[in-house]
Image (cartoon, rainbow, N blue to C red; front, side):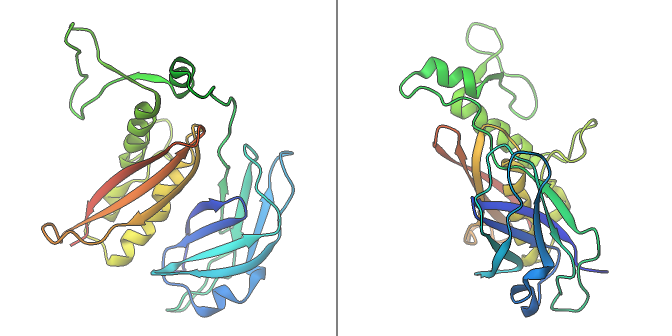
Length: 240
C-alpha cells in the first residue's frame, strides 16, 4: 500500500505540517519539488516551498516553510506527490488536500461580553446523552468561548455527519493502534479544529503517558480563537 497524505496542519502563516500515513524517508526533507501549495481562489498568491524540516518525535510528519504568508480566508491546496516512505513506496499522483486559514470576519470589541458572546455564539447544552435543563426548567445554554470549546470538542470526537462525511476527526478509527497512530490522529485533530471559522490557529500535542491509565493516550488540541484567547481541548483514545 502506498504512503498517503492524511492531514495538513497550519502551524503558522508560513509553516505547514503534513501528516502522512507512514514514516517518511530522509529524502522527504531534501527534495522540495515533492511539495506545492496553490491558492485556489483570488484570496492570495501561490507561495513557494523553500524548506522542509523534521518535526521532533513525529516521524510521519514533514513541516514545510513558505516564502509568502498565508492569507486568512483564502482557499488553498497542498500537494505532496512522490514523498518517499522509509519502508518503501511513495505518495501517488493526486496526493493533495484543501485547507483554509481561519477567517476574522469581525474583531470583537475588547471588554464587551455581549458582543463577544454574540460573535462566538450561543447553543443549547448536550451532556452526551440528553439535552440539559437549567434550574427554571428551560433548556440550558452555553455562550462565548465555552460554546466554541464545546463545539470543537464535539467536532473532534465526531465520526462524521450524514450530510458531511468530512466533518470530525473520527478518533474511533485509531483505537488500539500503534504509537504512530497517535501522531496521525494529532494532525487530524488540528486540521479539524481550524475548520471552525471562530478558530484562528490550532495545534495538537500528544501528552505524556498517564501511569495510572497506560492503555489510554491523551492528545491536547490548543485552539487560538479570533479574539486571541487560547483554549485547550483534550481527546482520549485507547491505544493498547
